[in-house]
Length: 498
Image (cartoon, rainbow, N blue to C red; front, top):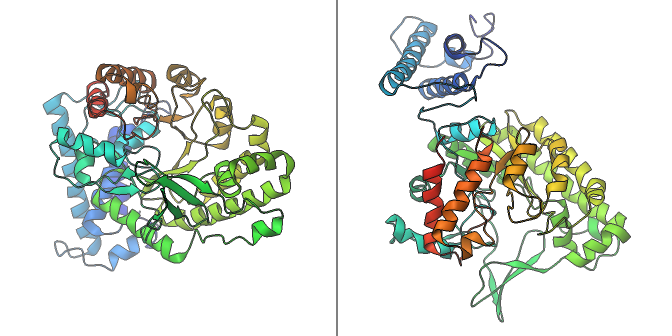
């Protein structure tokens, strides 16, 4: 380790590596079957403290910097300070163990009674280990949010009645959460904004409706007086009859340098300023949903059987733009971002919207190509979260085959989506992100006690062994009573401790 690597001054600093070896000797595995969760947590924290102290872990950079006058050599100074950092960290762990009777690990891979950061908590759950409590997601995406009207109703119950609430997701009319609300509700996740320089244009009134056109050319509409969210209104490629018309469409630039730089800067800032697990969403909906958004649902459904050339042209263009987006961003943000998300709704209440054969013909090969790009472009491990509403049980083996790590939302009221059965059959392969409370019947129409019991049941089904991040099945809508929303969070606090 001298001089970085064999005195070449390349690679990580020997003081950092030596500290990692000490951590490994104290907390690491002695057998391949042993749990290494605690060692990973301590090592990660040591690395973060090292970076806070020195600004870099690269040997050559450190040797040319100003690190302190305590010792005559730069390396001596770094070794002394790094040793102090490690000693303090290990002492804190020892004191915690002595004062609380800390049990560091169990045979189930649980990390018990350690003060975890949100990032560590979510990371352990994704690794199928039990953290201190079930991680909580609220507001990280357009499918795990809360409507602005719903949030306004519950703020007085949180002692925040004077807080202003703003729309963060225009199409869903979902609230933008700030750090005070996240901290109050112990939310462990946060989204990296995908449009830091500006999202959808402001809606304009057109008779009874508010309308807006997105960057893909699709028009969305919402009733101006009493609408709760926007729905697709006009498809830009509905009248296309040739591949040339598809190719000549005004497609957006999903990987413009300005956008990539802005997203990367936000990821850096959030990683430094918060300890939450960061999630980055896609540049657009998935292949099936983008197909019908651009062509119209009925037209695209017919295309799947009657116009395969048009289907292939649309989906190949979407794949091209998705690959450009992730290919440009992941080399910049994968060290900060823990989860990357893609969405495509294939389910209805009682079954699939399209057949498994249609999925495997058109969508699955493109997901395979896209996920391969994601894994190759990421410079650190990122988990692939896939959102698909409805009764998608028949496609779960395909998603696992594609390398999907996380399934959202677990629509518990749909056919075949019983949480206990899904955990038993697929819990070793998938983390379930959602399914915490039914948003179709129980949450809007049940009593607060029914909501608490629902949350308790889903935690009991999904939490054992890790592999579970709590959120409601879908967005908490405007018609949900305030007491039912509060009941979710009360039950999560009561039953979500490991």
